[in-house]
Length: 114
Image (cartoon, rainbow, N blue to C red; front, top):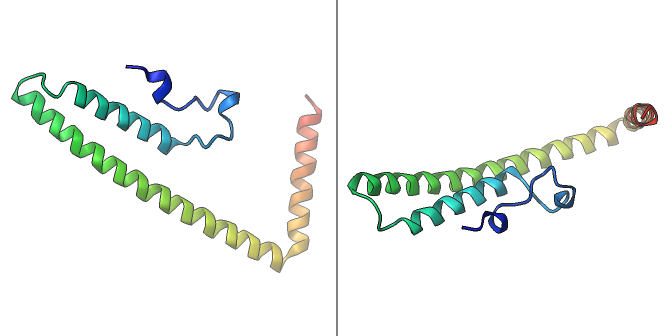
């Protein structure tokens, strides 16, 4: 089994930055590997192994469904937060500019000390 081509790159890898790696993609890759393992061992084992395999298949289906729900929910929450932030900046532009300036000064100070 070639795990190097199946699993997404590590997020510590600079080459992987910005290529869409996410927790859900890692978990989906893990689920794919588990399914591949189940298919490869489909004829092996006794009745207890077949029952465990069946439970694992059911759990994997539930995990995939829940990941899809979580991803949709997270996306909706992020969009809502971005919309509220946009409204707040439009309602109080000077506060937004002051916050941006403060963050810029703080980053400049921290990065300038390196």
